[in-house]
Length: 390
Ligand code: GDP
Image (tube, rainbow, N blue to C red; front, side):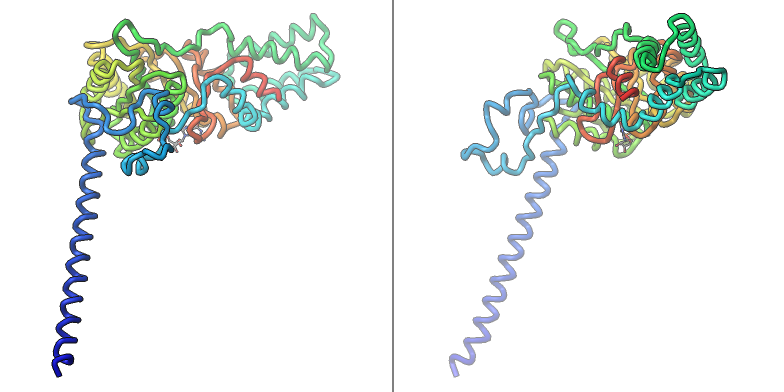
């Protein structure tokens, strides 16, 4: 009797206890999530320089404190390990096969034509067409054909010398004498500032992320500025790139003023004694005046505190003439110091390298050869031409 009354009472008590424990667990987990979110939201704190809560961005320090030692904390185990980016040297060599794959038809096509026993007018026309189709541009094409014709006439080139001559003349056209080095050395006690501009969709944000890796691989202390406030996901995208290699991203509210974010990023760079601040910008080609106002303001505001050392214009190699037209507009509104040609892996029209350099009188400094994190390489005229002729 007593037992039969006690059993339901006990069952009730157990049920209540289970519910209570469940409530406590759910509340605890939610609290944790909120805390962690808040923490990560505070990390970039653009206007209030604060020490990083996560792994310190300085390269090499992770080697002193390996993440897989038995003493690591729970916090440490939850953080993804910092990636070690590939050094810039030799990247183009690694990516050469990719370049050769996409540009093979241009190089092989030219070589096959030039190796013919009889080089008549028809063959020269075909050579011209091949070059123009690959976006080399009319003037450089005519120049190259003229030089090749002269050499064939004077030197009496046989099929076996065709490759060597074509190689020499193509390298000449890409102009190996241009200074393609990036200006990323500190100016006294101030960081170098690199402004990255270009139409949205060309691969600008990706390029800033990849460039941060190139610089980190060179042991540089980098700060990123997410001044593309126009595209909603751009700042998140950039921050993710930065976090992978322990680089801080300074960001502002969505739709915020790009110039003030650029200014904050440079201020942060100075506070952290960074070597380089790389600023991503929005590339709205609404009107030339609008673009000029926006980029001009970003540059002027930065120059209140630091020099702008590089203005890199990102161009999507797959867009051909359209890309060239856009590049011209940018070059009119801001003093571009270097070009980045992205998506060269996605087009057989590598001739754009030649055309765009000629058009703007600015060297191609970097090329994007894929969506992989380390698929950005310093441009080199000889290696580029060798890949064409592979
Ligand atoms: P943004 O609007 O100019 O900042 O462009 P994003 O950086 O968001 O890039 C646009 C798209 O281009 C993304 O899907 C990138 O992964 C892709 N992309 C960027 N660079 C390259 C490249 O060199 N090769 C290829 N295949 N895709 C690229």
